[in-house]
Length: 464
Image (cartoon, rainbow, N blue to C red; front, side, top):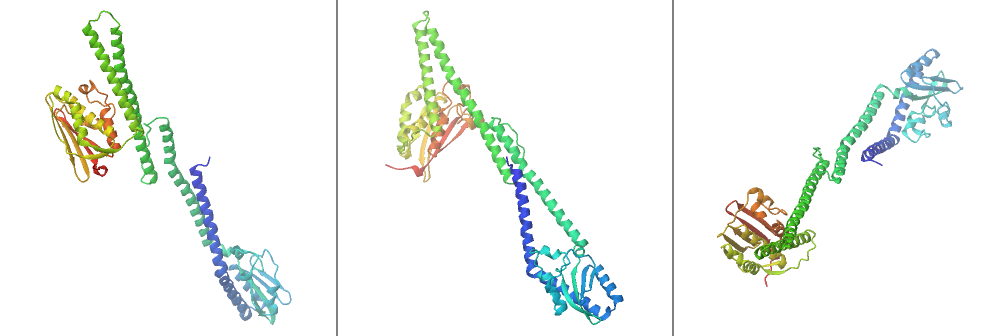
């Protein structure tokens, strides 16, 4: 399998190779178009200076050879050919001593031979370093009345001087450091991804406590931060799922055990009529509780999956609230709770059945957890952008911890709230309001009461 690390190294080497090739081609183009001709002209000038020195000062046989030997020691390869066929070599030997016909024009026609500029065996500039006799410049010269041809080229050893070797070493060192740095950087870049892969595997095995301690300020750091947030959310969801299953099992088990237990008691013959009726009433209440729990679970599941068939219509919120109050009037009178409300006629486009569920849950909670002889206030108002519904009671209230969890499923604050109910009502309320793009907030003080505030956007509002 090709890892990202290998791909990165391979890409680096390919880019480096392509860069070298492009650089070499550009340098070759510059050499072939301008530098090559200049080098040829410079060497022709040097050859002419040497030929002039021979004619003026070193034409004798005693000084001719020592003069050219000294010049060869300065870094030149020299070949001298006389019209009588005499040959003289000075300096580093040529690897190929073949001289083209064009070079003989130096002797026959006194023409200058531009072999370095016209050298065609090598297209690339590496031909500049070719140690061949035809890769020279030639100029005519006269010594003691005899015609000579002097052919010259720089010695390759001169081209590769100390400074050139230092430069070559510098280039090699830069290439080595660059590649080593790229390899180290690739490891630095890939290491957190490798750790992240291990973390993903652990999360896939439901290990949501796997620690991933990587601090970076780049895109990989952002990816890791997103993964940690996802891991935290998955951990929360897993805990919520397990708690949900545990709560459902407990809430189903309790009424079922009561029904089973009292049904066994009813089989006996030693019960009075009063006891029999009391046990039957308990079985009836537990059956209703179980039925209500089942309905609420089905509704909550449908809302979660967005599979509930929402039927939007223009709903008179004030009428729904008044109908809900009348439906629970007997419970209000039973606890001697005083209810007051301000409900101007307001329309809102919503699902009527779901909104009735919202009012049912909020009002029954306000009654259930209110004190005997307490009060409930319901206020409905509208602005240009919002419809606000406030349901406030004077009940037992909640602490700060309870407020933060009151909309969680199966959450019930204390023993006073565990005696009945399912802990799903407020979760359903929030889910319904989310579907209608609404919001609900709670403000509560222990021993003083609770106020629920609902905000609905009026852009959905429509009159009759």
